[in-house]
Length: 252
Image (cartoon, rainbow, N blue to C red; front, top):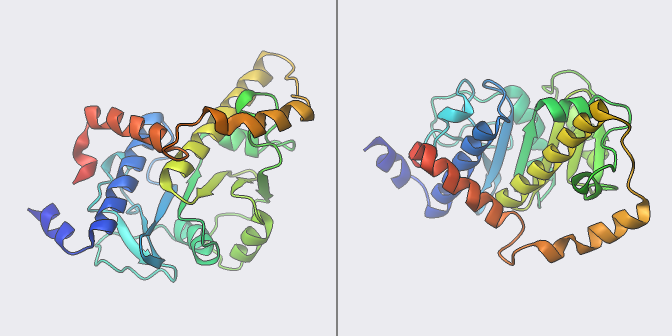
C-alpha cells in the first residue's frame, strides 16, 4: 500500500526511472561493486533537467528500492519529501555534472578495488587488453583533493573532464557517465574489467601494450558486435533478469 501511494505521487516516467536506477543499485551489489553505504549512481528524472535521483544515505545498495530513492535538485533541495539524508560528497560531485553536461543523464562513481588500484598508478589504465583498448584516448584524469565536499572543486572536475565521459579520479576511484543508464552501466562494466585485468596482468608478468594501429581498428569495429537495441540495453536487461531471480523487492 505504501509503495502504491508513493507511485501515485509521481509521473509514470519518473517511476520507470526509479525502477531502472533501483535495479542498477541491486546489480552493483550483486557484482560486488558496492562500498558499505557509500558511492553513488544518479539518474536524471525524465523531463526535469534540474532534478535527479540518488541513493538514500545510510542504506546499503541491497536495500535500495524504487520508492526510497531520493529526488533532489541540482542545488541539493529534496523534492519528494524523502525522510532520508543525501551524502554531501555524492551531491557535490554529481550535481556539478548534471548541472553543466546536458548529456550526462546517468553518472556512476565507485571505489572498487581494481578501479582504485589503477587510479592510484601513475600510468593509469594501460592499453594491454581487449577492454582497455576501447578506452584509449577516452579517459580524463582529476587529481585527488580530499573528500569531494567543496563546491569549488566542481569547476576543476568539469575542466578536467572536457569532452570525455570517463574519468579516473586519481588515488580515489572511477567515474563514468552517459546519456542513458544502460550505456553508463556497460561503460562501467567494461572499465571495471579493464582495471581487473591490468591488476592481474601486473601480478602475472610484464604486460604488453597493444600497438596504436591495432587499437584504432579495434575502436572502429566495436560497434559491429553490438545488438541494435542501443548501447548497454541487452547487457543491462540480462542483469535485471538475474537480480529478479534473486530478490525482486527493488521494484517496490
